[in-house]
Length: 98
Image (cartoon, rainbow, N blue to C red; front, side):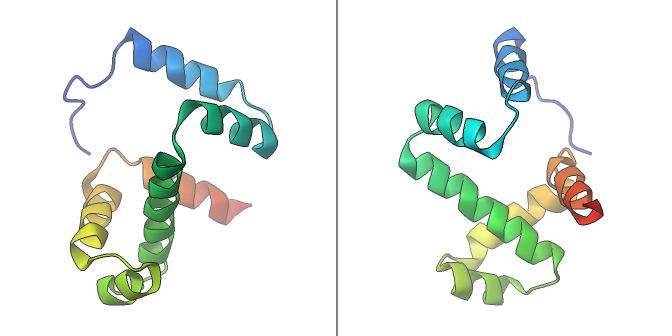
């Protein structure tokens, strides 16, 4: 697991606590649309798609072709999936249980 690197702060904690108050997908859509630009949302969606495809065992090339991105971008997401703070893995595993 990667070290914290001091990216967290009382302000990031405040944001994450605010996110935890959301109860439905619709509430999340409303909040994140107000918080983020459309391009930022699209980028998050693409990263999440890549993490899901990597988890299914798809190759970097397959993912890059399907999502229309570079294999370098896929490799970056793969790095965080395997050597990050475990957030991707946590959510992927929880969704598999549902």
